[in-house]
Image 1: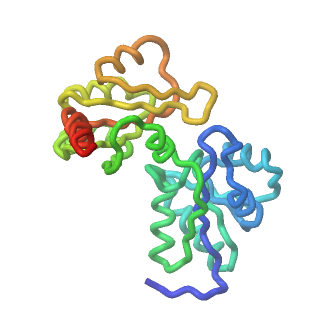
Image 2: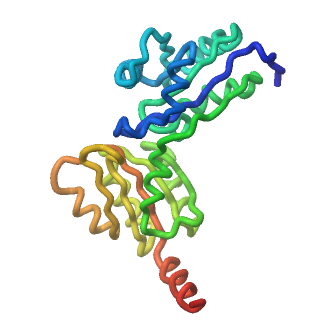
Image 3: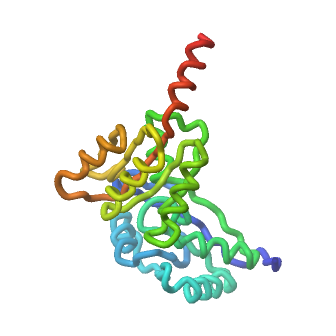
Length: 243
């Protein structure tokens, strides 16, 4: 790992709103305003965000899963010349099931300062209102679309703990079917469209949620919390015994 001087720029990992722009923090706005450049997943989405907060004339560097190497080189060059760079994702906190992880990881390895500007995260937002036990959990992000998906689900079921997943509207029914097959007597909590107009929070068995989402068009990104059967009732009984 190389050692950088104080004259090098800093990469600020900036969380942005999931939907409601009022969730933007004061520090996030200031950071975007003062940064010399902004690395973003989708320049169009970020341009809308910047316009909303009256931030103009910023150099935008596009990064996504198909241009990671080139984007890292561009940001590295900016940091080396002493320019601070803010990194944002389309929504929420960069690096959480997001190509921003590769950017931050590569710059860490080069010895640059990488600092967080905390804010919205779909993971923590969903868990904050989850009625299931979440004192400990395993975050699995998005499952593989095809290869390795079955073995991954079997591994998650073998943990015997609460599991948190991200899923798209195109595969949510498939995921719920897989939960039904692999997690015996599971309880499921779903957070959808967090902080947006059609936000929804529902709990139930895999079967009841499959029925719910089978009727009508499915929209929005999902956070899915799966609690394995039996353990919750045991925890509740232990809690009652102590009182």
